[in-house]
Length: 161
Image 1 (tube, rainbow, N blue to C red):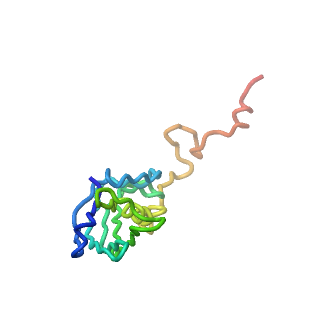
Image 2: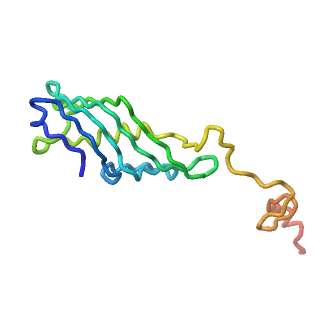
Image 3: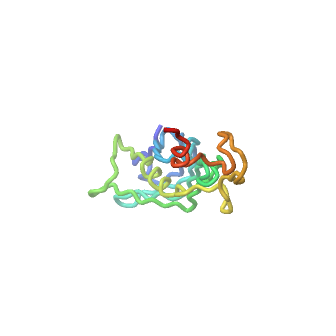
């Protein structure tokens, strides 16, 4: 279920919202195989109505399942948006859609969460990447001294025509 706020409840006082939003509701398509958002989003928000606008303030937390771009090791990356603020217009060209006096806050959460994703997830700032085999050792493919496959010209030289 998306994160909805009823505008009638905001007429007299501010609302405090706390809870978890399943990752499936966030509908995050990272298009990056190194980052997965499969855990629930934890939120603590205060919603206030100011004239024809909503003001959201609070904290968003989401644990991302990542794979290091250097060594390919899986790790968890905590995404925390502390002191998060969002302004949602209820009038004008960019107004939020109101259905049955309710506004869906989910798209606004999703947008700022995506902006907080790491561009190149690293398990550690000092990660040195994948270990390389020593030159001169025989590899699984058995390519000889250097561990590299023979060049095309070396293969052609062996042909008996």
